[in-house]
Amino acid sequence: MPPIFARAAKRAAWPILALSCLASGNATAQGAYPNHPISLVVPFAAGGPTDVVARSLGAAMSKTLGQSIVVENRTGAGGTLASTHVARAAPDGYTFLIHHNGMATAPALYRKLPFNPLTDFSYVGQVADVPMTLLGRKDLPPGDMAAFIKYARANGDKVNLANAGLGAVSQLCGMLLQESLGTQFTTVPYAGTAPALTALLGGQVDVLCDQTTQTIPHIKADRVKLYGVTTLDRIKALPDTPTLQESGLKGFEVKVWHGVYAPKGTPPEAIAKFNAALRAALKDPAFTKKMSELGAEIVPESKQTPEGLQTWLQTEVDKWGGIIRKAGVYAD
Image (cartoon, rainbow, N blue to C red; front, side, top):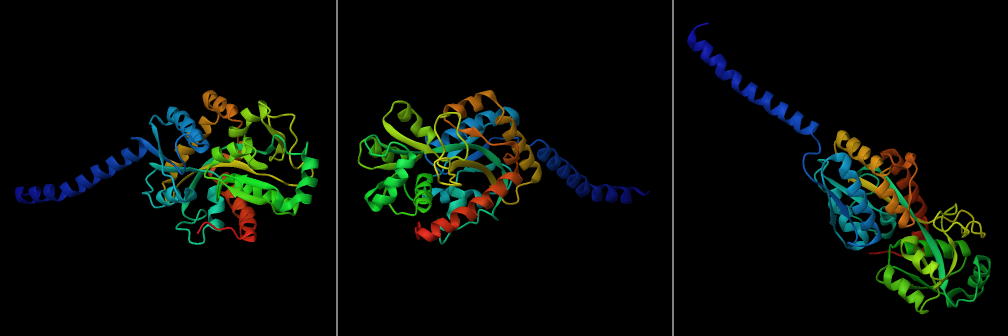
């Protein structure tokens, strides 16, 4: 080949070589996922129950991923600000969301919701369930759940029912309780779980439905009346306490559940690696011990998958949508 043609052929090959190197570099970067810290967005304040689960989970998952998981608290609007942020984030495998029941109730509570929980996310899996307890103030007359059911139906709106605010799981539990009993209480909302529980302890309200992470110390100290747990089966933390279903409220089930989500379009490889780390964390002794201390229970393996979370979310959206719309309670 004449020198002039050889030089031209060589110059023509440079762009192809550059593209080849770039493609190789991208493949290496993708294969090395994750190669920098990952953000796990929490819709609630630091120190709260969901935040505690998120930080414990992140620490356990980091062991498998080889990268730190940075918890980012984005509070406001019942968790919808954080969910909207993640739904609109780059689907690169470095932004995830951990959310509780609020992910399923948002479509009914907010008539102008800027995201769709069922279509705007990729799913990773569920984490742990926290049971709820139905409590009465210490001097409330009924001594057990059977007596409380009669008392509630006889007194109706004379009964003051506290909750932790619009969209809180305590509010959902109270709504289901009233529907199950066929009566209406006087609802007293508070700005969070702590003040609602303080009001119950102080005798300002009659009844509160709240999660075991908050109530077990007060139950063991005999500061409240415990009427039952809201799971279908009895829980390890309170083995002698009957469920509300056992006491006559058939099918009554409310628990704080946590799911992990990613922006829609996140690469399947990233979802698979993050899910593998999640499942490993749910077997990690330090994490399981922490959850046990909180009264939380690790979900079955069938719920630890993307498919398991997606199925459960759809079930919860269907369940709560009707209850919320029937009550006519909206956040906007």
